[in-house]
Length: 257
Image (cartoon, rainbow, N blue to C red; front, side, top):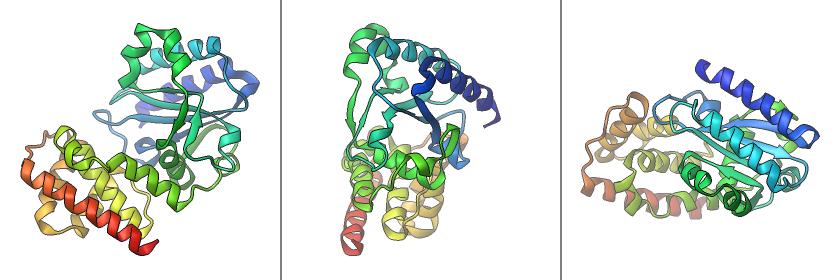
């Protein structure tokens, strides 16, 4: 985490310069906020809150700043949303955003900056999960305290957000096994015990809570995430795991709701 401190300080200062009085706050969530960020596979997850909508010319300058800092960011780079304060409290779901960036969108932005800033706005279900993590375990990098800016996310909104992320797990687990295996663990931990966990914490919860036949999958996913050890995936077992977890998550949620 120490290697990120200087980058985060420059990010804050450049936000202050670009957004001035429109800036409400800058907030860190995800693995970096929960103490399990690593330089191989983690995103640097940020939420920026503004008072009013950003003109496209400001969005262009902002995106250019983020792209430059993204070059220096280890792991999977920066993942960022800019949202207006008005949609944060009371919390609006699905949550409209002003601007979004992730490393997955870098080539799209570079190919057509004007088109990107015009199109990259609208509602995003993922923001409910981000705000829930913020309210439980996030960090304020600049501006107003988290609880003063972000209202509560209901259990129904949060579950819809995280379910949307795992609904296609039977298919997605073969393309991105580490992420899906650990994410399913932390979703089940939430619906059973109201725990808001990182991927690492979710995996460790799964090692002691899931049927023994699936623990080798969870351990392999943890080893890849934490140590960079590539998984050797048993496709059949992975698909069984995804099916079991989806059914368990849905059944547990419906029983406890």
